[in-house]
Length: 272
Length: 267
Image (cartoon, rainbow over all chains, first blue to last red; front, top):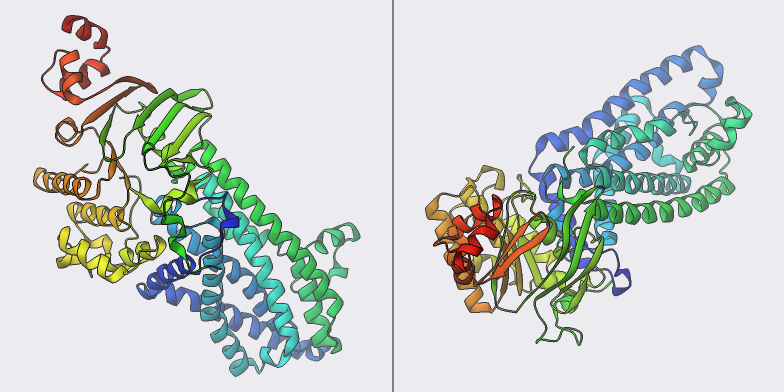
């Protein structure tokens, strides 16, 4: 895999080959497919009942119907988007196939693009049934959010890819010993992204940190939409601007970590 | 995006056909305190089969990894098929391939699925046809639709070889290609490699601990020890220099530090 020759063009053929590789893998393993469905379904059912209970006992939540369950669905887009990206990458480490790919004409940008497509495919498999469960059991129709949902989705998925690219680089550099970062890094931003509560709850100094994270804008935007019926375009544009910077930074970090892996010989021993 | 993936497979102006397949010039790799490769130089002509010998930790795998661009040298220069590595790796990666015990093919995918993916990655024109030819040549048909994880060691090696040959490489790098194979399968693999080299005028660089394999296949042997080239010549010339009848005896002389004495005796 060459990181030098980005200017020579990106091959749809090679990206397609990698997507085919992950598609074959998904189809070959029903536990993998089941896992994609299982956790999101569990999440939405649990939080749906919590929302239902709180709404019965608190007038604010009765008025702001759907904020909790909406937050759960959007959080899952963020979290599953990153996992969908990173797990496809980890599959190569687990299969000891990375050397084959690195030695092939596949370029890092093509590899990463195939992972983004797989992240969308895996996300769709998990999230679509989740939204249907929310509709059937809790009468929350996330699709009724309309166009704002697209803005929320795009911003969340861009953040998930940035995190996915960065952690994949860390695993590439440090081997499977760094695998736990894949599962835990997103949770580190969870309290600051203000998924279930407004930013104003945080201490003032921490609010500055929270506003540096694009998901914060999305969750604030969701609450504004569900509680005040207003779509905050300004929040979405600010999130998009930060996401653009994050994506560029994570790609740069991935290339730097790949180079470091080649310098330290980490690609020859991708174990722990 | 470009659909023309064969661009990287075509020889370019820089790719002078008279240039060596591999040129290694004063190559050094230092990991923290360890000099894994210590200033080695060699040049392999096109169409040759060269054996890279040496004990564990001699620097063979690091050398091959630097040739492939998987490891960046601390200093020195590598040219593959006339192109600088790793700077111009895009020019040559589609024209070379490798097999190593340090990598696997994905276990859950069938042999056909794996070969299809690598065929597409290497922009092979008619992948299905290429796979059926390889399946016939390497006797894969009995298990071509079986998951790679369910194959025996010998079958896996044949599949790995099929992957290494999927793009009909001009340059083939092999790290222990017959490790853990029974003598019959190992002999069969060697015969196939000889045939492939002859039919395609391919260059093969082979790291091996199997001295009989090296004697049979290689027209040149490079012996490495502690990151340096200890000797570099034809198998016959090396055996004569060490006054030995097999490369295994030469290997033991080198490994146990008897190289000078043996060479003195030979003189």
